[in-house]
Image (tube, rainbow, N blue to C red; front, side, top):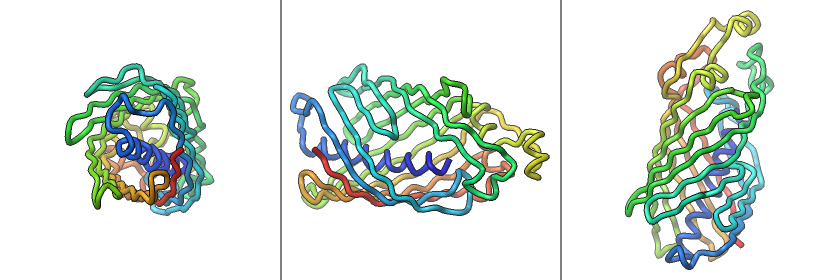
Amino acid sequence: MHKLLILSFCFLIFNSSVSAQNNYNNKSPTKQKMSVMTIGYGIFSSPKYEGGSKYTIRAAPFFNLKYRNIKVNPISGVRIEFFEGESWSGGIGLGGSFGRYTKQDTNLSGLGNIDWTVEAILFAKYRARFYSINSEIYSDILQNGHRGYYLKTSIGTAFPLFNMTTFIRPSLSITFADKNYLNSFFGVNPKQSLSSGYFEYFLNQGIKDASANFLMIYRLNDKVSLNGTLNYKVLMGAVASSPIIKSKDQFSGGFSLTYLY
């Protein structure tokens, strides 16, 4: 799960910086480039697993490729935007969940691994003048990992500062998940209880977390940007009461340098 968290922040930073640079460099949809590629490198910190109290720091390279209505990167996978209007856009994609492994933290000992899997993605976005709303549904189509689905909805805004050299993007998000997903990551079945020492714990579908994110992009020039992000997530409801949760308050953040081709 810590890999998923780190890669999620990589995606947030780099994908947001691509969008921001496109907004700066293109004044209307008719002037947008047919293809755009961004490469970068960053340092990120996040909990070792979702709900853990210990943190890890990782450095990671990144690339993002956009060609017409297709976007490809190693974090969000392959996405195809089927429609894009003045206010609405949406499409489908394929991504991956990196699972969770007991070696990530001693608090996971005896719980067993959650294997990686391929996820189908359905996404939609509404854009207004001063804000945007994004919704994404992820489902384990291989039934090999968490075997469930989750829905993440975010509302955010964006605005430039300092003569268009700095771009600010705050957002709020909430995540809902089904019982298969929640029990995979936060439940404790009888076998796991015997091997780990945790008491048995089962969850129904419900809200998993709420989070606030602050992204800042500083443009060194038309091609190069320095990006920073800080995220606060609070695990909620039955998830926060799970015996494997050592801290319901989760902080993550990082810095990166990107180059836009």
